[in-house]
Image (cartoon, rainbow, N blue to C red; front, top):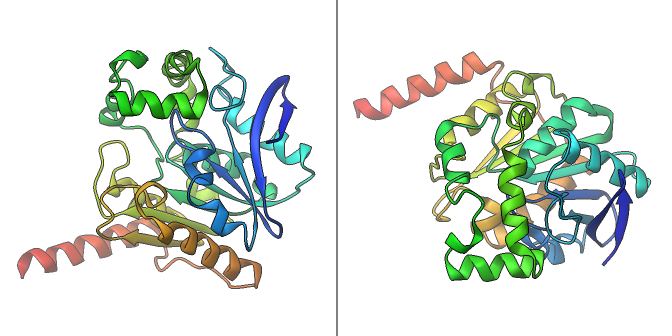
Length: 278
């Protein structure tokens, strides 16, 4: 599996298939395996899939600190290293936040965004949930301990502790909160979520993100048992990704059903009132 030195550090990634490039950015404390275990073998039959290990995780350098812009800077550096001028970028949870910030700062490098369980601003409940174990891997259930060992290697306890420190770096959460800026994103965006509310990935935030984007589609999958189509949706995730990218690569135009966030909010409020009245 290839590695590259980006911004002075080793970065690991998996590069599969050919065709239009799609980058896959994993969630908190994860690795490329979030995508390569189940989804990219199918997607790479049609498109080029590049699944990354973020700085601090997986096969990339296991650092204890970093600049708050590091994950965005590393994405840009990897695209330059691979000589990919423009790509579709798919992010799940933490990866969705990096993808959104990347699209805001480097709009010319993004063909489209695919956001799974997106977070546009960290909530107090979400922050508490992600800090619950205070970076102590020994407090995780045995199954999660083994999963972390598989993703990060024998020093996985260091990765868990480091990730706790990284996500609590002064300014990092503020940098990755994009609520007040997402309306500036002009590329097409697919917003994905399960029909399960989640304190870290609230459905309200997903609807708000969708409504603030000028060129977006909303994909809510029912009965998958969780917030993430990537984690809980099975083969539906790969089908959704391939369908979205195929449409865009063949010139399909994407527009939002709502003119503004306010019009969406009003429509949803009216709809909920009608449902409750019944």
